[in-house]
Length: 412
Ligand code: CTP
Image (cartoon, rainbow, N blue to C red; front, side, top):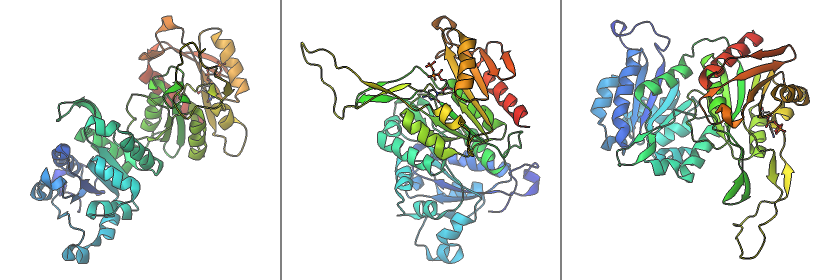
């Protein structure tokens, strides 16, 4: 598993790094071959573990030829155990990558099962683990898979989320394995992060709405696509920060290279934010529901003819920004809130700045005629104790990049 011969390798930051690639069963396993080629071209050593199901889709011979290394499959192979052993196999790498990762291997990882070489290696490893899921859209969206993904994310497993598109099973939706260059980029970010101005900093970002249950089928929520918050998380990661993104229910993909904690309610968002501390930077872009139903019904509330609709007693949710920004040893150095307003934008933003003890408020007018809510663009003002800076209308990605650069300047 040594680096590739010099003549093939341009000087590259990943030269000499070692990846243990676990190939599990799925039609997308053929893309693992391309991934190996890309990794070898960067000078990365690759050793493959092929599951029995993976072996139905790609051959050991192809993996071996491209990786130029022995391929491991058998947990009880005496030769392998005496040569290397599954513990050593898991320790000799700088990173363990599972691509494609099937619903089955993700479920095994989440529950700590070790019934073959791949799952045993994953349980025994002390190295970072990156998974690139690939499966049928319904399997991906199934609550069991989503719960397994949430468990793995909580444990720090990194994810290259699947893409949306037409699938081999004639269905359409998320579940397609990310393309090899996307997986390569995620690997590079872990093994050879570009030294950016935010290297060594930890940033906490909230994004999306929260859902506050009324009963098991109904909820209260604010409108929020999560686009701006997700773009900020990605932009901070691009500048070298380690980013934890706490996000409510959204339909957009997790940004690559970011640790994502998926939550539903405001109270869960607060818990996830508090457990992500300490952080140097905190950006609160989520549209948190201000209230929740005092006692959510445990069963579905039924309509009854002639009976008035149920009254809802609302109680306030915790203010996550104000809680994290309150003075204390864990207060991030730079705390940034948002103010999405339809009236008196600046007055409201300035009052939020003081009331919530934020350092900056990113204020935007979200009146329906602006098209900002749910759209791709944003026009923001940065409100701080130093004054107000008005930015032009920009794509949300560009607002995010500009904000990330401003954050880097402020912390320099
Ligand atoms: N916020 C938060 N927790 C809450 C409410 C808001 O963290 N429970 C954060 C938002 O993420 C945002 C900022 O506070 O960064 C302002 O949110 P906004 O909804 O505009 O303000 P509110 O405090 O809810 O005030 P109002 O609804 O009265 O405008």
